[in-house]
Length: 373
Image 1 (tube, rainbow, N blue to C red):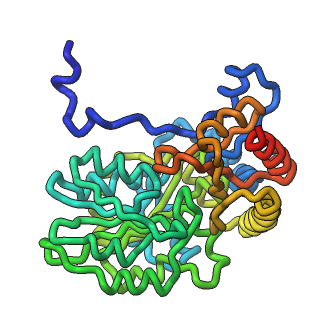
Image 2: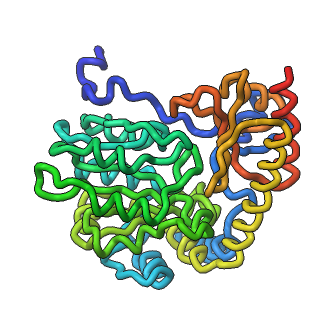
Image 3: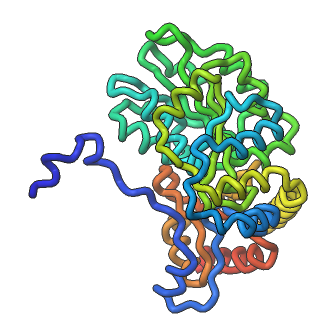
């Protein structure tokens, strides 16, 4: 069978997503008894205890299909953020939501604008739908250049992806920058402004910055705006795959038409419904990340390692004279999983998730040793 003759042309150049290596895999492959993972921006404090309790209480019901509408979870999100359930949609993690948005809006003759160094799943979604990706250079300090992104919009521009804070740089755009961008977007051939997908996966970590924008505050005046968030990061539910988003009720209606039935499983729904009100877990997680970022910043400074100040729970640091891949492999041998970012066109950088203090100490010791060799 000539599989190439029947595969959709858009899929031929598509490569598999490279996920962070699991701890169990590294232990098995390298024969290590102890491994720490600082690769996938997971919460080092683990899952919300309220979520774990809710999971235990509902395990006996896993023989039943979940609520396809996610009523209780939508209700919890509605109460938390003071927004109507009609403006809320759910997904099996942010990745599925990106996929649903692409399926809903992107055609082969559409253009979609992104930043050069941003989350790779946008590129994959655009490519899968056969649309044209327009990658715009970031500013010199690795922030989305919103003014340039706006100028690259033309009559064929269907959508724009903005990650705020951005992954993998950790940088963010301010309220003033986002406000100006949304107001100045040109109208396309459809007679509307392009759809703006504002990905706020790291919202809870960034909101401490006074000039950081809350996407929800722009939603009413911008019906072309879709805001994405997740329970994978600060709430520690990455393994359950549950994300959510906000949009106009018309957009939400169409997203629900293209999503798979029962896309968010029952355990994920009850866990997220409990986690969203676990303020203590959020505050502890933010405090840990804030304190440990300052520790790593000081260590990078003393070692003269270039890095980017981050509004999230990870730091992007330079690896010169070695490539990020070389440092990644060196750290793996020491039992530390980080993330090389060559797929983001950042060959001499490494992304490290903020861990517990002893994990960060171990990482910085081994990192400095590798750079000295």
